[in-house]
Amino acid sequence: MTAAGAVLILAVLLIVLALVYFLVSTIVQLRRITAGLDEVIAGVGEIVEKSAPVNDVVTAINQQLDAGVDLLEGLLVKKAGLRDAVGLIDGVYPGAAADGLRNFPESTDVDAPRIGEVYTRGTLSLARLGREAPIAAVSPRGAVLRNIAGGSLAARMLYPHVRHESPEKLPGSPGIGADAPDQYEQRDDIGAPRKRFPASRS
Amino acid sequence: MTLLWIGNAVLLLVVLPLVVYLLRGVLEAAKSIVPSVNKIATVAAAGSKDLDAAALLLTTQDQVTRTVAGVANYGGSLDVILDDAEEERG
Image (cartoon, rainbow over all chains, first blue to last red; front, side, top):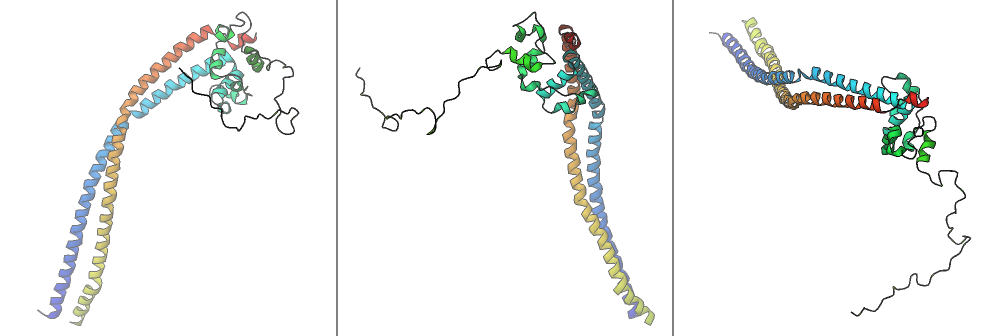
């Protein structure tokens, strides 16, 4: 065998060894990847299985809630009127009037009365009850207290007070200071040590 | 004979390094995939565990149905008790 032939065999042997080493290492890594992907497939299979009924259930829940919203919106508008209904909703949920009512597209154009600034939430709830409400006991046979056109005035009439009905000139608060019209004498005891009373004899 | 030596030189100096370089790249790429696959497997298992509560949606659906039915009953009663806004104006 010539030297050139021996070198050729050595070169081929080196190449084969390199191929074996790297290919076997690659096979080992690919088997690890396969094992990992098996775990992934198992997990994803569980996810698919568990989430399969979610779509139908959520759709059914949304349908139920839609029916509830339709019912409540319709009842509110029927009983309170569109303008007052929007004002009521805006009073309970500030800013909600801008979104309007879902089944009443014209509600977005309504100038909502500021009911929330006049009534408290509890008063609002009672006022919605109309003549049967305890808040209407003042005039059970009169008109319903809630007045769509003049809701603010009706609310003030619920709590008669001098400040609510054209008040007279109320006495002003006393002025204080060096330039105040009424000057008061300075008390001597202010700043002095506190008086101590003798101990009581029992 | 000279050609054989040239061939040997090419084999040792060009082919062998090229084979090693290419196979090493394949091996490194395969090694880099393994951690990613393991992380994905962990996330998939966690996601599957998170969905254990999805079965409670059936309870939620039942509760929503009952609640809406109750609201409908109250709404029907209120519709009878309260005057309509149109009637009040009149």
